[in-house]
Length: 347
Image (cartoon, rainbow, N blue to C red; front, side, top):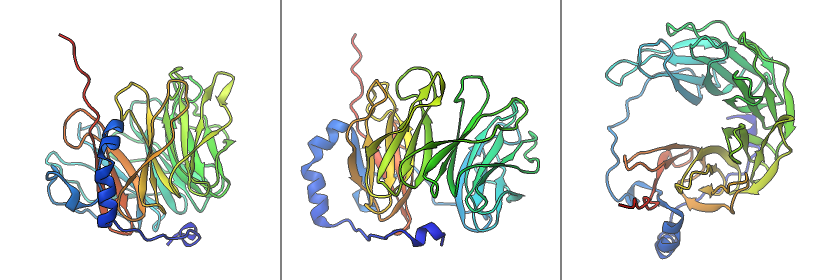
């Protein structure tokens, strides 16, 4: 168990019949927002379109996963950050949906988050890995054949927990944003054309930021940041600024201890919205975006116990983004299918 996990209060939750009744009574209100929660398998209206899980070995205690085509064969491959082994595992994909045995590459100590980007503009995917115990980010440049060069490390804040890729100064190069949970800030590392990075510049966030995501929240063409803060139960929005990478953070309340954040357009209005997985309150918060970079009050949807991560995808092929939350205490995944009405096309 991580040191930070020991310091956080666990609040067991369970889905009761009474809570289900409350959800049913609120169905009309829920439909207005556009999300239908299927918090446990018994609530599913129809079988999910997935086969039984196939498991592949990685390093010890895998904490984060990213996909990319690392050997240029047109098939998706996987990169996995293993916090217990101080390395990242690369699993190359086969044509039939299976994966080859993992090959491991050394990183900093306690790698906890991994992201894919092209950091030296050679058209080959590279890796950025946030290392919690060494307070840095490892950059592994890709060779296009599925292998990676030795890691080069760049200092970040204290106890980085999440890394994201974006172009924060509009120079066409990939930059990094790192959420540092012990120093309660976000480190921004601007990229150079050679695959190296400038020294980190830190921006204040909420208390104990644990996850960071990139989006354009005010439609100005600049990359903005959304940061989930586990210690202050909110999300920090840092809008990109023409005079410097980011403006000061503006915070919006979420559930308790949001550990993961995802960006998507959940109500089909063309504006990016936010979803957070709230570990202690056992729910997912949805914050709908306004056109000016602000967000509406969060609406919560019950999922399993201690949701650790949330991801977006169209799981039922209806053209609407759905959500999946990984629940660390109940050892399951909650799926929230999006029921936003489709736009009516005039004849």
